[in-house]
Image 1 (tube, helix red, strand yellow):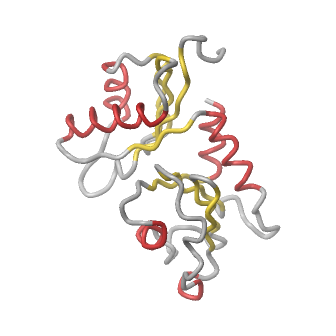
Image 2 (image 1 turned 60 degrees about the vertical axis):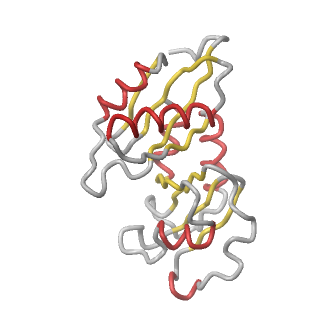
Length: 186
């Protein structure tokens, strides 16, 4: 398949918390909402709130996030948050994350935290790294490069811990490096 037509822009929306707290957003519903918004080439991926869409070229990523978030919030009567990136931005985030790979890292060690706006560059300056060791986080533009050498499942470097450092008012959603690579190639 070729890229979007010139009057269209390709975006990837990453939903936050779609399968927690009793809420389960079906990917078919997510695709239907995107169709209702008039977006084309809608393709969901995995059951974790990932969707690639083509939108009118004039629609910027923030507008896509706002429109999709509002439509989903209305459908589910709950505040649903969305972060949007272009496929090129996802590929760039994956490359930056790969550059921080440690030689001993397994395939599940690296993750990217996508934020709605750039976190403060010094967000982790006073972090209690001993509490979350051996895990590490680093600010890189609008993303957090996350390293979980022993896996993310039992880590104390949780989303809540990250938000304490970057600002609780931010939208933050995390994807594995493998997922980010796949989404950049959809």
